[in-house]
Image (tube, rainbow, N blue to C red; front, side, top):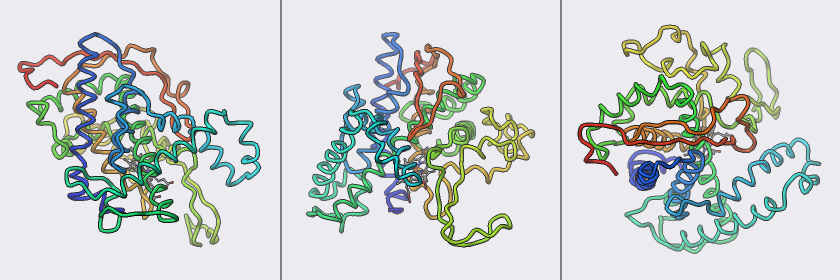
Length: 376
Ligand code: HEM
C-alpha cells in the first residue's frame, strides 16, 4: 500500500482533503456570521471521517454537507468500548462470553450493519474503473486498477483494508486536531505566534498550500507537541511478539508478547523537560526567536507518534497534511474564543477504543485584515 501514501499519489489526494476542509470553513463562516457556537469535536468527526471514507474507497458520507452523523460514525462511536473488550479478550477469552452483559444492544446491532454497508460500497467501487479526477487508496490494491468482479476471500480482504483505512484515517486524525484546539485554548500564548506566522505567510486564503505549510516552524512545532501529548494507540499498547533477541541487555525469548505505551513515555521527564505541559518551543531550532534552551536536552527520538519500523503508520503524511491545512485555514480566517466550560485533561478525557472528545465549543469571528477579499 505504501505507493498510495507517497509522491504523486499523495499529492493527488490533497484536492479532496481541501474540498472538505473548504466546506467546513464555509460552514464556520455561516455560523460565525450568525454568532453561533461550533461544536469542535462533532465538526472534526464529520470532516475527518468524510475525508477518510472518500480517500479509502470513494465513499461519500456527506456528514459535513448535511451536518449530521452517518450511521457508520454512529456505529464507530458505539463500537469504541467493544474494541477494548475484543483486545482484552485475547488475554481473557471469557470476556467474549460476557460481552452481551457489557455491550448495549444498539452496539451489538450497529457493528454488522456497518460492515454490510461498507461491503456494498467496496463492491460498487471494485466494479468501477479508476477515475482520473478522483484518487483513492483502493487504486493500489485492485488489479490494474480496472473495473473487476471480486468475491470470496479476496473481497473480505479488500473490505478489511478499506475499513482499516477509514477507521485508522478518521479516528487518530480527528483526535489530534481536536487536541490542538484544546491545547491552544488552554495555552492562549501559543495563538498569537500562530496567527502571525499563518497570516504573514499567505496573502489570500487560496494561497494556503500544503507544501508551504510543511516549512513553517511554529505550526509544525504546535503539531509535534500535540502529537506528543495526545499519543494514540493507548488502548492496546502496541503488542509485538519477540523474534528472540536482546533488549536493554536482557534476552527476550522468541514468542514473548512485548508491549509499550507511547502515552506513558511521551509524558515522561526521563525524555522531555516539563513533560506534561504543552510547550511547542521544544521543537524549534536554535536561531528561531522563540527557541528556548531549557528544552535542548529533550530526547526527540522518544517521539514516535506513528511508531517506527515496518508496521509504522502508512497514513502519517496524510494526517500531517490534514492537520496543517485545517489549523492554518481556520487561523487565517478566524479569531477563536472558547464558549464551553474550561476542560481539564486529567478529569475530562478518557481513552477507550478511541479517545473521548469532551464537549468543546468555540465562537469564531472573522480575522480583521486590510484586505478581506479572499474570504470563503
Ligand atoms: C494523527 C494521526 C494518526 C496517528 C497518531 C496514527 C498512529 C498510528 C499508529 C501508532 C499505528 C500503529 C498501530 C499498531 O501497530 O498497533 C498506526 C497504524 C496504522 N495507521 Fe495510523 N495514525 C494516524 C493517521 C492515519 C491515517 C490518516 C491513516 C490512513 C490514511 C492511517 C492508517 C493506518 C493504518 C492502515 C495502520 C495499520 C498499519 C499496519 O498494521 O501495518 N493512520 N497509526
